Length: 454
Image 1: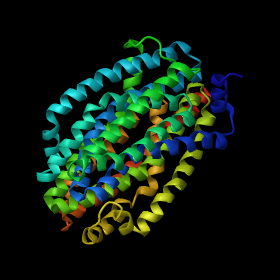
Image 2: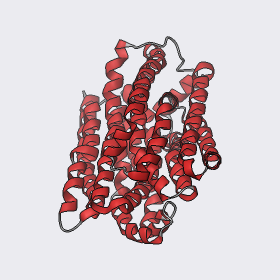
Image 3: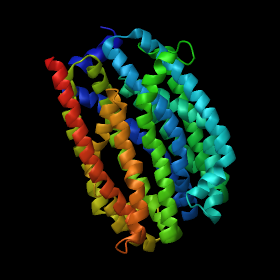
Image 4: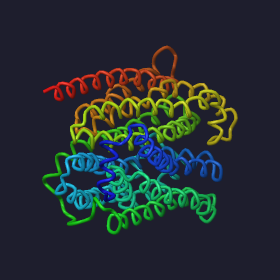
């Protein structure tokens, strides 16, 4: 049996638990490695340069999600189309995937480079960056924008590997890039010196993403048995299915940018630079703890998409149950230590004991609902995988814009919460969106049962 057939057969007929492990373990490791990029930038800059530079990196982070949004828009959308095409054995669609992806990502990346370089300072001002923090953030973010093409092509092509079911290969390529980033961070910070240390962190990220792009392209040119690069051009037949699914995934990235911009600005208003630093460290921990759950969702996507495309609805249900239980268990790995030792966690980023003491109780508040994130994230991935973009978009918008942002603005003005209201806003939002996700899932499986009976 060829590698191509073997992957499809594993997804549509292999043991559910073993298939879940074979998909999830490399995906989780790969996504953890992705999370190390910004996480390690913040750690190295915080320890080797200082709190102002660390805050600058964190204030810049929401705008790096512009690139993540583009990679996710095209990568997740294309990956969803690919998984369903593999389930249907539709080789004509499979052959169009990479050419369309490269053309679309390249054009969007060039737009980001031009606009990003022109409006860097204005964007950072929206996030409340001022004084030294603003100047350091401008240095960092401009370098990141210059590398947008490398970042977006590298990450989006890696998503195609995952959609193909090649989670181990995707992990190895991503891990190589991230290990390079971790090695380059301290080295380049030293080379640039303490005054310009943020430039070293930015260049480390861009160089490692260039390596990621080169390795990914080599795989699709020389190694892949299913997906190859043919004509690089826009494909009209793929435009709607790719973007309709990709938009919901992109919204989570872009709305994170909007969300964090307003959150940092609100923290500056109610608590000043000290609470911006606390928020930056807390959101770094939250973002990193999200990564393993995103990883398991990357393994979940081809399993659901391929079986849904093959109309194998019983396995869709079995995979959903198995993955969600496993994701909840995985969440405990982060939930327990963060809730038990919040001060130690914040101390990885902040050297001032007084700031750490002020932020520790609020870190617990921020993580109150983290235990439910496995179900929440996989619900959004589920609807992306089966091509139901509306449900995925509604959940993403509710969590990151429609509910959360009004609460961020309103809660600091109530009950004397002030800056602490920002942290409580997350918990309230998560509970409402979790309820909505469960309702949507029940409805989706009800429709599948009716279709199977018919």
